[in-house]
Length: 96
Image (cartoon, rainbow, N blue to C red):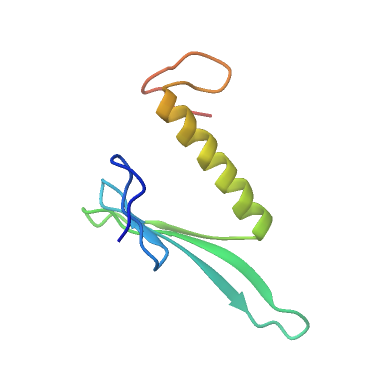
């Protein structure tokens, strides 16, 4: 396992991390062999939590995966600064 800073969650070369609430989030590639052309996707698998509540799964195109990565990085940056887009911090308020 490797970490990138004192407050970072551990990640590994297998493409997953385990959140502090116990969910295992895996990011992998998926290739479906279609007759005329292969279909490639990036998969995101959010596993069950410590209490056994089920997780979710999604298959994203490359552009969708890049868009999600952009949104995650934006929100991570805002969380580190304690701000929200277009206004002051509203701690505990749901984002839209």
